[in-house]
Length: 224
Image (cartoon, rainbow, N blue to C red):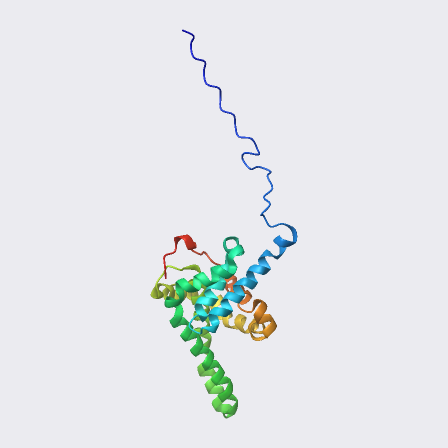
């Protein structure tokens, strides 16, 4: 009998088979690639505006915009829907924070109306009593939004504790956050800028001020 010949060695896959050097026709290029990030900010902004109109969704909307703009590598092609999805997952958990934020805003508005009518000495005392409390509350709410943006699975007490821990670890940022929000006020007070980026750029700036995001991935997150 003739001995069987050894099997021929397997050929290594070619560069074409490995996809090396192959151009993907669906990959954004040129002007489309340049506009991808601005479009993501615009999509996140419009989704956030829809959530803010519900009042109870203010914080989930801001957190969703923060999550999307802080992780564009993951959400660049689905900014609008990813922001809405974050709101859906976290609305029940973060709705009380929306109420707290609304109360703080109402308090600031009332102080703006009442303080000018007070006597100078009483006004100085009132400002000295109210300003530190308002400053701390705004800083805590800012930290809460950043923490809520990075965690879709944690319960409310966990998010609150992590927000307190974040402000304690970054006291300079906590001190500067309310001033930064006031500095960015034209973006969310002037209608043309509000429609374009008023609720996407400020959350992105604040998230970077707090040290950036380390978000859990949507595929790992359970329902809120």
